[in-house]
Amino acid sequence: MQFVLGVVSHASVVKMLEQHLEDMYATSPPESVHALDLNELKQDDIRFWTLWEADRLCGCGAIKRLSPEHGELKSMRVANYYRQRGIGERILHHLQADAAQNGMTRLSLETGSMGFFLPARRLYQKFGFAECAPFGRYQNDPNSVFMTKRL
Image 1 (cartoon, one colour):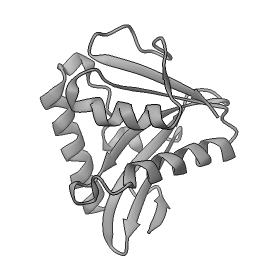
Image 2 (cartoon, rainbow, N blue to C red):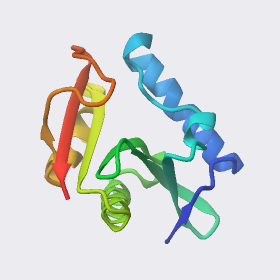
Image 3 (cartoon, one colour):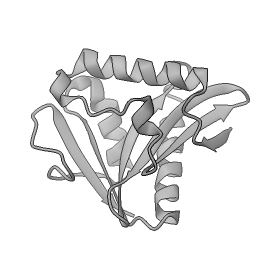
Image 4 (spheres, rainbow, N blue to C red):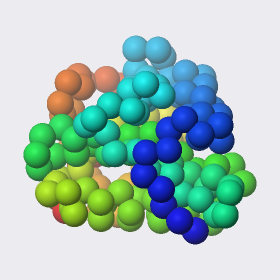
């Protein structure tokens, strides 16, 4: 498997990100959806990573730089075929290492509070993320859980 930086426009990636947004809007009220679209993932303050097995997309994830020392995890997604195979852990580990290598000392994230997001919250907790107050431009929202970790 190989990580690739910045491949947002590949057809497989576009399809995965469209599915990601569909799931977010199907699960959360529109005002509580904070997932980034394709154009937002191409911004200079975003490092977007994909994980591939040969030519098959396994998953993706991004880091949005909030400040020189603080990043936010965005667009974490594992392809359906690769779920329950440790791919989410592999992507999260890679994103943390990338953030640290780029001078960040803290990573935070927002995820949903509904049962749909429980596997994601468990993954983040397993990697040492703890619930925190809203950060950046986020506001308190009963549909959101905010988490952070010092690297």
